Length: 341
Image (cartoon, rainbow, N blue to C red; front, top):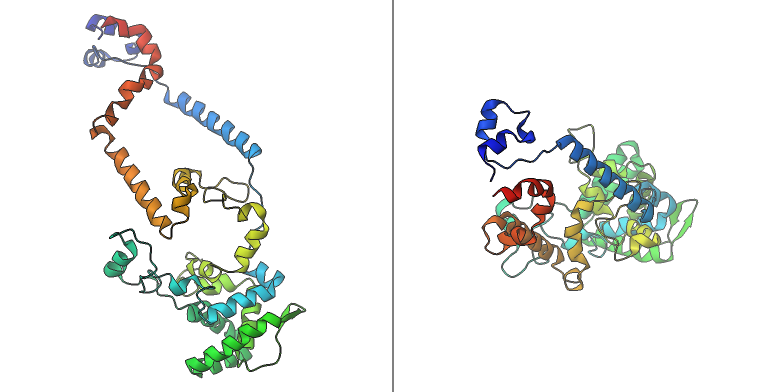
């Protein structure tokens, strides 16, 4: 360490007052310009981002929404809507998802006794109860029916039918969609006993083309606000086998299994800070597991705990002393003062 006299003559202390110089006697100091260092780091990161963006740019594709699909792929749109009305688990992810949408935890992710979905249900219950046919099809149509009396009549007829009759109508209509044709943007099915289902699906098609479907789906949760804050139902509408997925598959990079949460379309980078989280999904044993999300979360929690307790873990806390990176960072101080003892 430096002596008091040496420290008082240290140019690093020249700008300090007498009391500060007295208190800092013998304390190793290093000049540090926070603004300059910040500008250097900002410039370096900006240069790296620009170079990487030019070298590995992401595709800039327009957003795929319900209006696009209803206009360009009306048959696929109607098939998705009919599948949700039938509450088909292959179409609607809500059917077998479990909490927070329903109380069935049989398909929830778990690892031994660790079952967060079951715990959440026991503590909070079903926080976002969703019945796909009612919330994703019939309620949006009921809002549109305020301007369409014919649609209102079809909804009333469907609502007063028995569950068995509803299922028969929807099943027959979905089967007829296999041989349906599209004429002037309208889906035409062969003659059959479909009840009011064709009118309901035509109403969904018109609602989708109008660009108001997402708003109608979110209206129930946002009826007190002028803006849409909760897109949950809109995302669930096209969650599994859907025109959204089909459109993404046509964009080759987006269908690539390596396209993960850190990638993004458009002019902005994706969630690069989640790269360490995304990394674990590249491990086949994790990615192919039905409990992949839970495994990754547990790994990240374990890593966070290790980092949090790093100063208290023998061996690990000595790594900086062994690596001696600090001597490189403070190299000018060590060159001037380390030999003083």
